[in-house]
Length: 408
Ligand code: CAA
Image 1 (cartoon, rainbow, N blue to C red):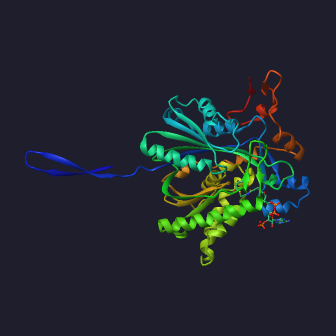
Image 2: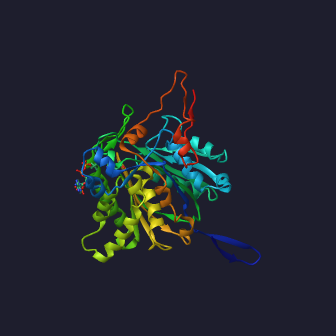
Image 3: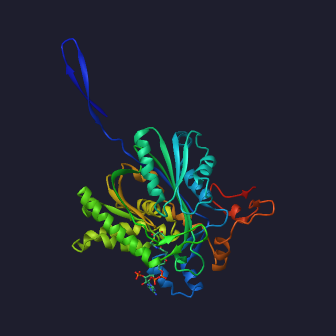
């Protein structure tokens, strides 16, 4: 809205534009989620690894892990998540596709370029991949918001896509997962506004990393959880100081969820002891709604925070227009950010209320099937090709896209 002030003079009539251009609201207009068709019950993993099942069920608060066959990679999952939400009009307006991932399929070409082609998005778009462990998609959101501030009618597609593999019989094995979140970012969004207040923190630490010479990440698990929590408390303190805000300014919190119990520790760490039990219970109720999906998928790295947000929106009856959601993003290495979203009028009608059916319709694997499936690699023949077109995983998939072939 432009406010103007007329300065009337005899004969001449000048207009003074009085600066004020009300900031456009930018945020999440649509959100989709895709996961593989298969899962492993976490109790079967405990049995297979000779662990007490309560360590995983209660100690990590995990119940299932999403298992991706070789035909589901970050491109097919990312494109499938986006295909669920985009219509032809959206595809004409998308000017940028950004994929946050730490399971890239190519050192050089961005997965966003493949996804742009699969979705048939208009050609005059920028397509890139962002990497900083589980933080990448949050950086993508910020980039998208800045772009739309300067290009009001543009949309940006942000995708968080990962397969989290720690390897057999490792401490991280019980926190694996696979899945993808797609978010359409535009002005006047139908779900949530991304507000300006945010604080980031960077620490050069080795808590979790995956160098080129290793198929699996190298993880200092306990150190990583300490860093996650310490980054949260120090960043949130700085946020409160810089923006003169407090817990009372928020209606709910969503956290990056490597495993749901860490989210519970996160919420406990930011609640000062003085907070009334009743007040804290309100947040805990919402927290439990935010882990419904994560408990059944496992860690999906870049998408975990946004799956937690989707889970909160679709499983909590106590949210309303104007509610402010605190968001904590953490990527090992480490970069974190605390920012917030505001729910907009009518947000509920742009979500699903039957998504749990998708979880129930997955196929359960035995531990042997999981080991064979999750760790299968692409093996090229002598000509440098590989063909999965007759693979049963392709026939069984409910997703819009799968990897069919690798051709030299
Ligand atoms: N009944 C109930 N609870 C039990 C139990 C039982 N029989 N046995 C153990 N537990 C509890 C433990 O007390 C512990 O809970 P608390 O932390 O609340 O005390 C929990 O189960 C796990 O037990 P351990 O700590 O002994 O488990 P572990 O050492 O084998 O593995 C882990 C835990 C280190 C987190 C491991 O899962 C791991 O390495 N995970 C990968 C790294 C990770 O997720 N880090 C998170 C921060 S980094 C990040 O956020 C980026 C990212 O996504 C990777």
